[in-house]
Length: 111
Image (cartoon, rainbow, N blue to C red; front, side, top):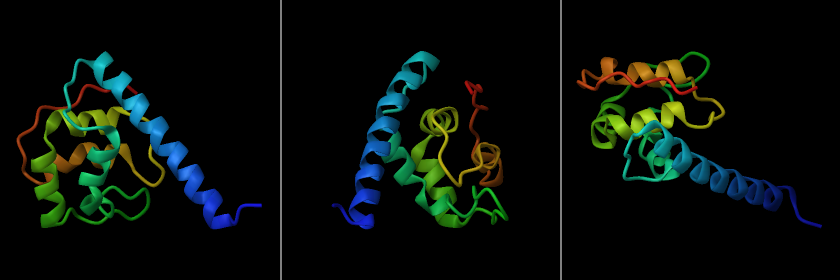
């Protein structure tokens, strides 16, 4: 019998594989070309996790804004239009470029 920790790790791996596969399909369908996988783009935005929290989001940090600039508009849109991520408010994520004074075109909503 697997321990709770091993079960959680297995479930996390399955979840990540599903996310990576689905973002590839969504990105191609939306005509956006993000050179990263959904998972690697999501990891790039880890400094923004407090700024996109579902409850009581914080202002984006300098590290968050740098991550947004590095990630780029196509990858941000792929994340925003991709599968839901627990604890991430999509509306807050869409506001990050404005809050970070990054001049991105708005994402077309595919959701």
